[in-house]
Image 1 (cartoon, rainbow, N blue to C red):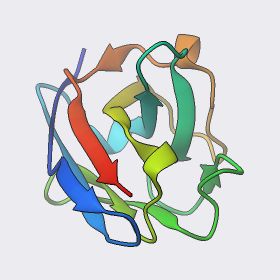
Image 2 (cartoon, rainbow, N blue to C red):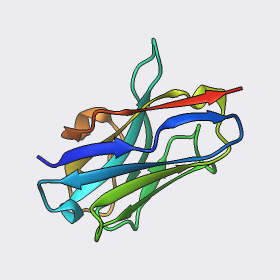
Image 3 (spheres, rainbow, N blue to C red):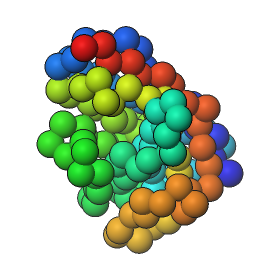
Length: 126
């Protein structure tokens, strides 16, 4: 499995921005679709965004559409989540995830992803 390490979390005021990074190692990064999920205290893990192996197809949760952008740089073995116009309800632990795929579309269910990072905390103060 590919190993994933997130970075870039922190404390930000409402309306601010953060960019999360997910560094991959151990396998050929371009063979994997990537996703971001989040889990707030007392809530279930929820899908945030996903991107296919080459970056030509993306999907977003309705709650983040227009504010968050997922991207990837296969030359750097890294996926990103740019988060703008952050709200207090975006506060959660954000985890990146991967599964081997070279099809156009992407999955959105956590059970479809086979590798997970340890997560990074994002706290948005109102």
